[in-house]
Image (cartoon, rainbow, N blue to C red; front, side):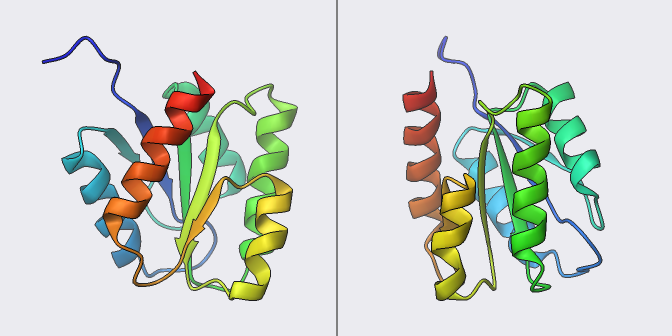
Length: 135
């Protein structure tokens, strides 16, 4: 076991979206890569997601969303992190998000958006680099 601190990631499913297969796939992949995963479960509010991330001393929040409400949920989570002086927590996401919407999510402060079919290794490498850069 190395002395290196494990990356802690909250995986969240906001809103009424009940499809969590993608969230579970990325959670397992990150866990298998040696990260600590806190899965919030379905139908979480942005407030619940941010509270969990702060309480768990998370390095990142991964938002999985398929409902089409990605603009609202990413903005709300990022705004709440700022309000709670926790904007050092990296926000990234995936799901069915139109390509045209990705630039605005990145402008809001999301670090990366991974669409369907993205290899989990791509997300793992990005997250490791993002957390290392943040430190």
